[in-house]
Image 1 (spheres, helix red, strand yellow):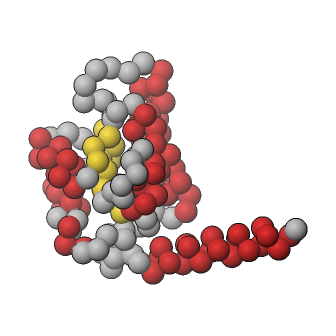
Image 2: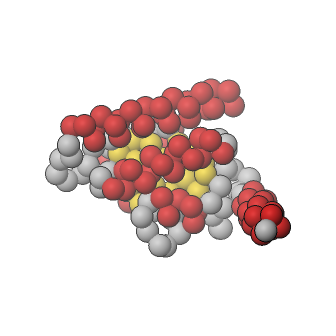
Length: 157
């Protein structure tokens, strides 16, 4: 009986290694396990409240229009040229950004079945309103993840 869980654990470790091997060389700052978990949880909550822009085209359009938020970029994108301009746009607009290891995990958190290159987590929904309590909870999670990302970015540069 113990061998089944051991086999599952070994298979999961293999998947984690494959994710890390598929990472692009520009995927910095890369979220660690804990920060990745918090970030994907924030993306999931933002998707529930319609505070999320999915895909390179939507994210770039939102950044150029002046929307503020948190940009989450997948690190295993191929070809890498698809997303190389997104971090530059984020830095020019003072938007924090972070890389996560897998585009599939990012898509699952963003409530889509299609793998997603990047998402922009907004603090307010683009249309309509959400309950004040939910807004505060989302803002609290957003602030925590944004501060963790700024710590990582400051330690890199």
